[in-house]
Figure (tube, rainbow, N blue to C red):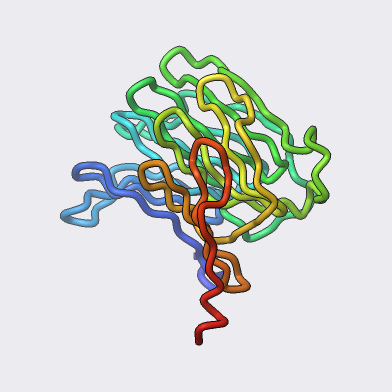
Length: 221
């Protein structure tokens, strides 16, 4: 009730009969999808600003301080938490999580420009990559990233200044292309499609990052 005059921002995911919800007050809920009744509700103290991923009994979340959580879907108990580098400026950008369910790996990029790969079965960090090591022209506290796209052991995403391809197994950078987009990259077979806010549509070779073709759709309107 004390939060009733403050806008609530929700992230929602469905798993079987469970509706999993997190909010900007630090709460995580498990609701029965069919009845709307609360199965459990937990407060973790810090607002959540990530998408929600689920695999079996595992719920994956990141709060606004870049703390990574694995929570039990059955009872809401915390299975794992990992402190990462916090960002001093709080933004409305949503932190993104991607899963490789086959190999039990979770990938996420923080607002501090760090990319993590964690095996949630054995709870080990596979690798960590810091984008600031590339000496790209961006401030950490103004860092932005599109959602990570995982496909065929490759991670594709776009940040403030460039679009990147990384090897999902070892975190090695395959290539980077000096065009940024705020739109989720579309990966289709051996192609990556990017769209910029200036109306430029690009088709890149997924393996090399080379431009196959580009079109400015604004010039056609």
